[in-house]
Image: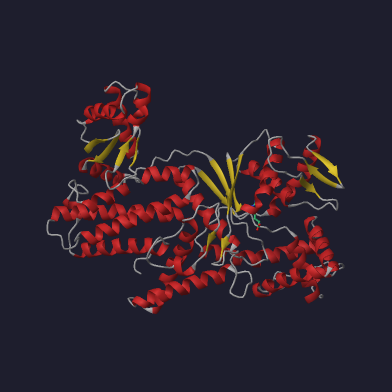
Length: 588
Ligand code: ARG
């Protein structure tokens, strides 16, 4: 469906042409004086220069040329030469009716790319913390938006499953349980099928080992060696690694499921291992790398750089490969398996340098099979003190605990109203809590830091997830009441009303902006635009709700029009929250 702005711009362009001016001046925009008009065209101001004529004279000519159109209720020239526009009820109502008939509410999905989104990136054996929350929330929403726009999208979690944390766990476990067969070099039997630890044991092993490695140099060296052996295929450690993976990944799956985050691929850094040797040989053959203090590095700086971009280290002097090596090899794997047009990496802003280096090496090395690489960096989630979010005790907040805290806050709010049983309140609190967290995050532009404020995020009023859900629940309940009266809006009418009262019109105006908003949310990878839109839409709906009697409306035709408007509002809100990655309960 054409965007409402474009429809109007077409009319105005024609009017400019008919009045003897260049049609390029016909652009219509949303009014910045909503108290005066709904839309405006400022083209006469710009045209005045070209035609050396007073702007209001041009505006008058254009307004005269346009007055025939039934699209507008009024087209008014105000000095010095603005054209104020009020759209007609009939045009708006037919636009909304058409939108209601469309599967994507009038949004024209024209994406046709094959895209990989790399997000999540948790590190196996380490507990998930809030830092991983943002990439999961943002990445999931981008994945849905890109799909909605028509692209083929593969979401890959890209587990951090190959780093030093594995060596640390292996060596700590060695000290805790020295008799395990994995540490017996003479052992020739089959390794046990059962993991030698539970999840909670594993969760204690890593922090202990990590703390120890910081004070005990020999322990750190042991862990580095163990990591190296693991990566080179040492059988006992591979066997142990599989156990670490199984136990940890089962828990991760649960955590992401609770977040309503779904990956198509559960690949990890380890999956790229098999491509590394050949890749390095290829870099050497192409002369992309050279030796520097025993390490193998690729120069990536460019003349236009405004800050220092250090060389990308591909292999350390001890033969170990690095984060960048893995990311490069992963690109080779992805090109081979998926052949993407684009790879989007959602990660913390602090990883920007890493990705700049990786992309530059990739641009030089993989020129024959090229994908577009995009780094979508996000800011830090801070506490109310403006510093990175911590627990009350000052430690790293585990994701699970954070979610539990949010759910508790929402649960208490629901119980204040006491309209549902405790059990029901618990279930609802999960749905609403998730919306609180996700909306709180996504309503900010991703690249910026934001303050995580549980009280504000869980409030049922204001620019929050719960407020949006509350609005949807309100609509659902009205529709239910209407259905209980035994009436059927589908049988009674063709659609929304065509003679509108003020709040009804405002609601329709908001609705009609859906396709335009979607287009820019997609183009700019900006879920916060969806948040801003549904906040405005919810406000417009609630105003409409307070100013009109819906169930008590006696004029049945009018009532049916209201019901149709409620239906399309509900659907639009639901489509939007689905794109943000959460859903609405039926009560709250
Ligand atoms: N595992 C990394 C971390 O926790 C994030 C991975 C991001 N994705 C990537 N392809 N490097 O910092």
